[in-house]
Length: 307
Image (cartoon, rainbow, N blue to C red; front, side, top):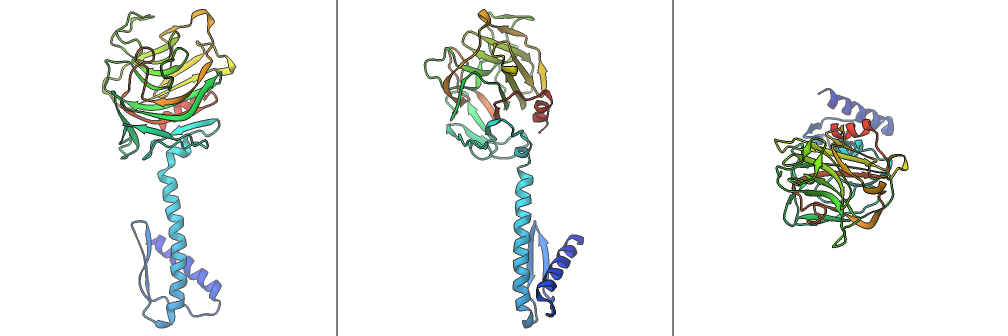
């Protein structure tokens, strides 16, 4: 009730300023319901018609401000994403649009909208693990310091799956991918032994890779991030992998001959891999993909997990 009185006081004070000595007859009713300010009853005095019209204009202006504030609050997550160096951002809020300033919007191929980690409807994409993917005009090429961040949810533990990679067609020898379950049940041996059925998050290229292992037995949402090329050092060993805001020590990696990455000029693709090299189609949900052309700090990545 206090808020309504404040609104009425503002309205009356404003009207008095503009009408000066005019009589203000306020025998109508102003109320608020469901974030909507309303003049629910017309004045009973015919002489108050001019004042009613004026009040209606003020109410409309106030309602516009309320609507704008509500939209800003609903989009609070986007406001918390670091914008310095942000070159691509796909929050998947009802579509696959790029919400960075570059507008490299995604084209959806079979993936369907679903609820995100907060339960908000149509705010993430589901991929069937067979043919679904999203492609974009965003190009990943050359040698650049970069940070990749995304959320995903999957119960699939039997297949390698690409989350983010380059749309490289049949020539993927130099392309890269961010892959879950890399080298699953393979002969590759890491510090702790064979990967076998252990889940992993990997930064992979056909002949070079780095992985960290983790457990996600409940198939819930997890946040993943990778920082590459810090201090303009583009060795394949110079990367940091994060899961749920925590930096994991690399448990298995290979870099023949001190190789440096130099990505071919291929666009971004989400949820689709090359079965023989970079993992297969992703099965599960993906959300909030963000890419920066700089190295985010440990604190910034921890904050991304807390959003």
